[in-house]
Image (tube, helix red, strand yellow):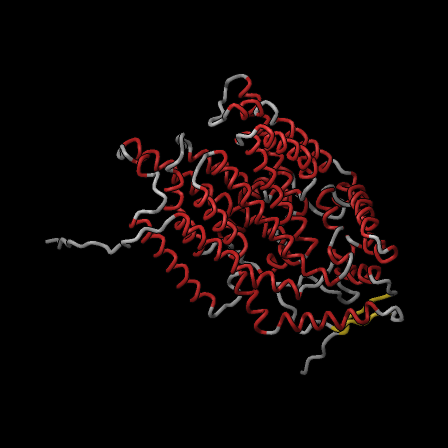
Length: 530
């Protein structure tokens, strides 16, 4: 006979409030950034930092004038547009490396990059959940912090961390403009859903101002924004002919929905300038790409292979599960049901895949860390939105069929005892599992990797070795600078170094020599005992 057990699971007697959870998540995010940002004080420019920012740096050395260096950066970006790449806005930002003015300012790189990413993500989620959908602001903060933690700290590859947060030429080109893209889309939402007419007008102006530059961001981000701009135009046309309705618009929003096409068109014009740049033909002659159809197919496969299979780990799944009770409560404030989860998941998958298409089209691979970091962040973002959509859809079904008073109970500003218990259990699983993973591998998370490099002295040694190099590089009497090979450069900070003449990366030596006005720069290899 089957044995029937009668038992009750223990639950918390005290509920977790939305505000308390929001404060905890903000604190966790801020504390997790401390070692990441502190590590920036040991950072040093490399590779493209010396070539892309060469003219602005030489101008600043010659004149000592900040504005003259900025003008030189515009000139270099124009040269790049005509001779190398079409992403004119990203090129301009790359030319404005902090080291143009002083190597001592290079510590600002992670501060600038992470600040823009944080601002963009928070601005977008506030525009979507609070302004457009009128949902709880504290839960929205939880979603923003959780998304940022996954984007930054769950990033697996050390090379992606270095190129995404510490190497200016890669980080500002990709992660910084990615954060700006969130801000721009957030502006579009707030144009429609802000209730202040003057505020909507200001945001429309800002959206138009930034639309063109964002069309000239890195091709991964620019392509996604072009897709969004095209969808905006499609919705505007269908809305004009009453084929599609836009829910939740107030009187101000109904006026500005007729103008939202303007920044979309400007963005597409900027994207058009980018993809038809003269420099693209020159660059394409140096690379081996794929046909558009093959690039799309590789992107669809790459989403599984590169991101889901190789990068997503157990902690990502745990955090996405942790978001379920948060999204359940958040969705309680929805005034309209979400009805098409399958369509949204297909859309989300397509957007993540489109993030990879330019690289497969241009160079036939997706190997560089700066590409991987953007694909990972895009995956995290759309994975979170997909969980929200599915959770909201399921809640809508339950409210229709079971809970007649669900809307009334959703007004609570805290989780139920059961949901509070589930949140704490998932937090415990995350902490316990993380401890098991970090103890044998301190580089498991971005924050723990930064802590290890600081605590072990690797970062300090790297900084000291760069200080020794600078003595030779800054000495005007030295025309052939001999730089010692790094003892053991930290993976979090190091991208590429000077090398020997027989290697393909030898161009870095020439770029650094021009940057510091040397005839030649050579590397002195460390002699290892046999």
